[in-house]
Structure formats: C-alpha cells, structure tokens
Amino acid sequence: LTPSLSYMNDDQPHTFDEFWFCEQFRKRAIELNSREIPQDSLDEWLFQMRHYGAPSRLMDWSEGALIALFFAVNEIDINKENDDAIIYMLQPFLWNKAASYGYAVPESRHPKIRSYFKLAFTQNKLTTVNQSDNDIFGRYALAVRPPVINRRMVAQRSVFTVHGSELTLGSNERHNELQVDLLKQATIISKNVEESRQGNLLAGIKIDCDAKGSIKKELELMGITSYTLFTDLDGLVKELTFKYKDTNR
Image 1 (spheres, rainbow, N blue to C red):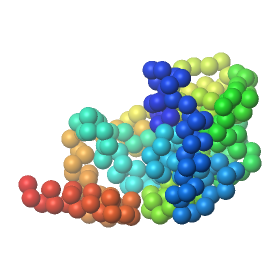
Image 2: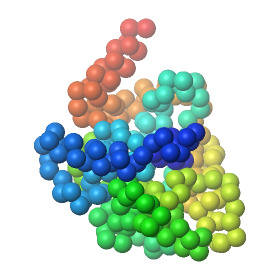
Image 3: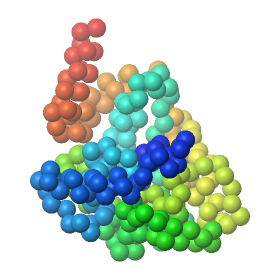
C-alpha cells in the first residue's frame, strides 16, 4: 500500500519534484480557488491537491465499510477490472501508537505532526524529519483526521494516512526493533472478516472478481452510488451510466 506520490518515483526517483509541484500548485491555485486557504495551512493545501487528483503523500480511507466496498469493486484502472479486489482495514489508534505518536488519531493541523505535511513543501527533506533508524516518528505513515474542505469528504466519510519519509504502509520486511517490526508486518489478506480483523494493525479482505458485478448492484439498492459519494454532476453521470447500461442489456 503506497500513496500516489510513490507511483511518480518508482523508476526514476528524481524525475518528479514534489516540492516544485506543491509550490506551483499553491501559487497558481490561489487565483482559481473560491475558498481561500492560508499559505501556512500546509495540511489543507495537501488535502485540496488530493481532492483534484494530484500525486501526494496522502492515502484515502473511509470510516464507512460500504463506502470502502464501493471503491474496491469500482476499479478505476480498466486493466484491473478482471482482477480480484481487496478492502484494506487499518486500526488507526494502534497504528499511531506503534509509530510512536501515541494512542490517538490527531487532527491534521496538530503542531506535532506539521512536519509530515511540511515534507511536501520542503526541498531538503532530510532536515524536516529525523531520518535516524532509532527514531520511528516521522518515518512511517500516521492516521489523521482532515479538515472538511468539500462535500465529497462528508459523503465519503473521508479520513487519511499521511506518509513520512518511507512511503510504504505495510510490507514483508523485518526489522530488529519491535515497533518497526509491527509496522512492517506482512499484511493479512483473507476472505474471513473476523480473521482479518483480529490482532492486525493492517489487514485485507479479498473479494473475488466474479462477485464485483452483483456487489455493485446490491450497493446501488442500498443507496451507495457514484452520485451519493461524489455529489456532483460527474457522479450523477456515472450513476446513470451504470444504471441504464445494466437496464438495456
């Protein structure tokens, strides 16, 4: 699990300049943005960028299980339509405790975690967070509560993880230090909900590809559609397209 920023750096780490991108967006968006965001509200700027699809160190989550299911079965990448889906679950309080923040999920504007957002607007990122192997805080993702800056965030019950110097959320790597080992444990992926939930900071529920179509229809019956989650004309068109495409088969 990695945020969209990591996709920009996979093959050639120096071809995408996060600092330049963020600074240009912040400067040029002011003249277009009807809602003024203070220059020093770095968290709000990053959430605004994410809202419009910009690559960032934010990863989207939802507090609604059916909402998460909707996004899992409605794959954006057309090349993955025939793949199985996975719903990932994170225990945010335990995760943050393991990441040395404490047993809490802070508001994104909390002064203690400002360094996470400052990373995106800093050229020399090594001076922004402690990169020492002995200092976990600042290296791994933190679960945060965002400011509500648009209707989509309300409809989607949006929450986020903001990633530090290491973009990967979970992996099979091991480390001698206990807390780091907890954060880098292998992700548990299962079809059994209880098995996935019990005792895991990060877990996944697998959904067979063949079940996606019927799940989409059932979600529509329960009122979980593109329109109710995106609350704009784009969402309405996607909902109507799905509904009438299915009707006319």
